[in-house]
Length: 148
Image 1: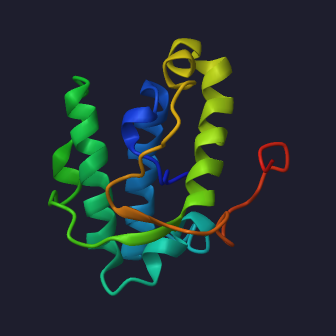
Image 2: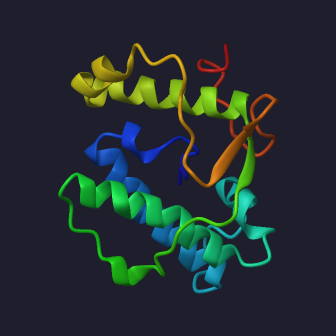
């Protein structure tokens, strides 16, 4: 499960579909409707919030909007769409780490997307997050080949 901190516009089609599915799974977990994944580190940012499902719905609203912009047919009825009114702090090091992780995937999976993104100098976060100083989050499972 990967709930990307970067803006969903950076994802290729496979990544966007996977994010939607994984976000819906996360929603089930946070709603208490499944026993698996309850302690998954990607959920840490959401599960300690007073209303984690609502927060995740805000997260997924942005994913849904990106999908519609691309002509996908995601089922909006699976979430309660709304504008983001809450924001979560995100260390800049986490955003950089995730962008490198994505670029490693895209280089082989979707080279034309990698080519488009390779010159980006300032990565935009998902609108749910705002950037603060700091390195990779404690909950991140670091792939040492990407940490430099």
